[in-house]
Image 1 (tube, rainbow, N blue to C red):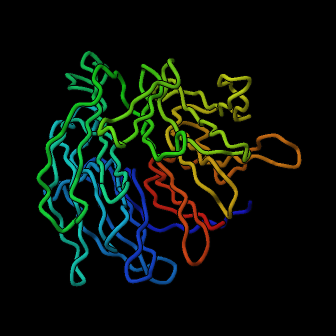
Image 2: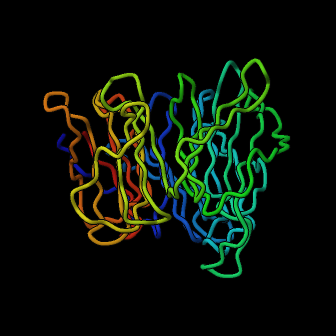
Length: 346
């Protein structure tokens, strides 16, 4: 897998990324934390830029950008998480593309919101959101745990967003990791904290949310995909919180065991995503301390082993995402430590 890099923009503390379709064209969305910018890029080589906000007065502190099934150009975004301490006014917004313009509406306030996503199931939309903690007096204060909130949103995203949250789980310290994936045949959200990894599944006929624990040791981030095609998902885990451990876990003889680790020492692992690249199941992983590698992990069917592929070193990615376009597959990367938005063409 040889990838060609294109630098999209310079963005202070570039942190989050995603892509959406508008009138048949793929648009890239990048945002920064702190008082950072959120901008949308399209056109040839994604060189056409539209800025939605770029100052602290318009907010910033964007941890998550979430696209959804439904109207083109609609997406959810978080604001207000400026630092681990300064994050008490964070909230979720819905951005609608209407008559050629982007219009935003606040959906709900969630103090200390770090991650969220939407699961669309049987013409229902469910929100799952996770707070990193419950408030801090300083960076080292972890005395108040985070929570997981859930609710159902209107399926019609043009309806008013009258949201009432339910706390599904409390007592989660360093409640940091969050990704969607398949779990037992259903789309689920996986959360990672000091308590381990939990899978959260929206209501079925019972009307009850499902939640189950998979790992019971501290995990910072998690991503899930069936790497080798055996019908069982593998887990990529970064551990402990903002730590130096990266492992791929596979079910062996009925229990999950570490079967792959990156060959180079890294620290402050942070970026993590799972999807296919040109049809091949892939984990994208990045670390924010030297050597700050951004790399892919795939399963080699011929040798029956996992392998890593270096995309770039020295970039310090906060987040990364595999996207599929009419022009092929890309890896988007928010290279935070060098204030850069970039894409890598597969």
